[in-house]
Image 1 (tube, one colour):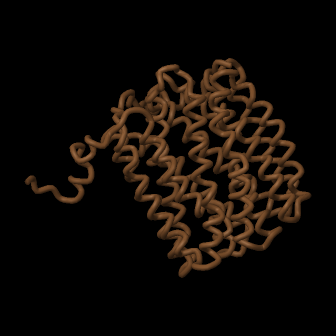
Image 2 (image 1 turned 90 degrees about the horizontal axis):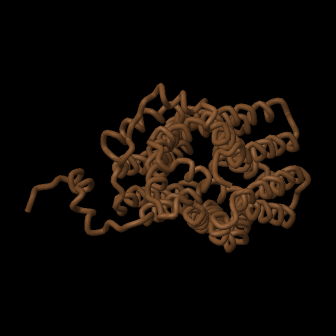
Image 3 (image 1 turned 120 degrees about the horizontal axis):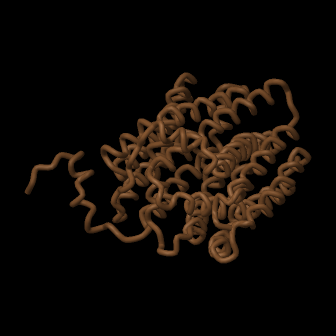
Length: 396
């Protein structure tokens, strides 16, 4: 028997070849494991930082730092992918995500560990999502449309995420944050093996830095660039500011988790259907979702109890199906035939925009701005998302 050490065995293609399957199985499994693990902790991370630092401004500064790190390491991660491949880079992303969660546990003893924690989280982004999106674009079902694929990814994302908040709230209540992060680490490490299971072989791995920036600021990608910027703004508001708002209104991790989980489940059933609808009817439905959810954001400052918060969040997550399913499909369709540069542009735009969005939100809180302005900023982001289906950027 060959004398393999652990590292050689782990990455030996012969070890995985009997388990490889066609299609997007690896991507779908990766989606389930990542969002199951992060669903446990995601909405509680800003609250954890708020609890440790005692200042909302510090929450947004930490997230701004995370986005800055992610932006800075996009090119190094891309060259690493070219050198060692999609699967191994994705596994490294799982390791850095687990390290991020480990440092979150240590931050309870020493607040300075928040910095290396968010550093490793920032490193995770290019290691994880460059391989993920590049694989998705290059494994096509044959129709050159990505509505069904985007619908399935969205369905699995929401299915995996739906149980996380309520379970996370219960775990925090009975066992504390440390156990929450330990359980999330387990799912994170398992996700590192998922992309080894597909038969996709890397192609189109050309990386030319000067061409990336030329293409990124070119007219051809104007709609994509604006749409990605808007998605970063909406994510900052809904993913950071909204959990803080709900927790301050309800004062309970358990109630926060129950409301978010229940809202996800309510919207879950129509997610997969939306993907087929996008392929059949086009992506103009995104504009309806943008209008509905923008109005939803603007009424949120007036919510102060559990039932109205639940109803508003359920409606928002249902409306978001009309936004993010065609949004993902538009992005993937535009990427057909593109090389790795296209995914690099995605990460650069999203995370630099996320860095600026967190600074803006931090400034709003620092100067005592109202929640109406905070959620209005999120509505602005949603309006920008609509540009991804304008200017003939994609087939409507």
